[in-house]
Length: 217
Ligand code: CTP
Image (cartoon, rainbow, N blue to C red; front, side, top):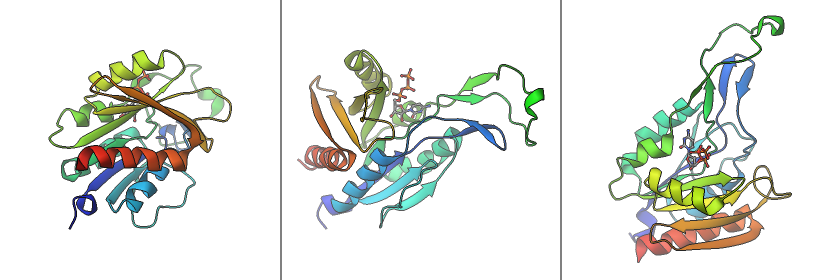
């Protein structure tokens, strides 16, 4: 078996939802398109793929093992269970940074909802998991509205990643929800490169090709 065909890749995709009652939650506009494009590209490369996905409306990539999750905590436990056996870990999910402090199992009547909902931070999945990195190649993402390079390089360090794939959000027709994106890849050796505008499918293929080159060279 060639090295490429024995590579096991763990990918997270989509948003997480943090419910405060059965019908209301905190989340973000992620549709999972980038993560699913990466999963498809990894399968096309001959890798085996564990896809941990938040709630999305996308067709499951044929051949991936899909682990559906809802909250950041569920995503963390699933990643925690799969990380040690992966060769490549790509954390492309848009994890909700905040969760309501309390969950009420009955729908809260709106007249009774406090005007402010108390929040706690969710676990930083990437940072926590990457701390136990052994030989895995770890790719994090970064979504920024400003100072892309500064924030991406800070995340490269703080989250112990080999690469950070960063994109600027708030640009018409790119990023969250759209089919296209522009991404900048920041590496530990200090180099970076920008790719796109291109479809997320094309960017997914490009990112997997680039990772494949690094890990098989
Ligand atoms: N991430 C994570 N767990 C979280 C939040 C983020 O694993 N609770 C991961 C994302 O999947 C991404 C990377 O961390 O790979 C950076 O996410 P981003 O939202 O850009 O940054 P944050 O760490 O949330 O920091 P900030 O919101 O301050 O930019």
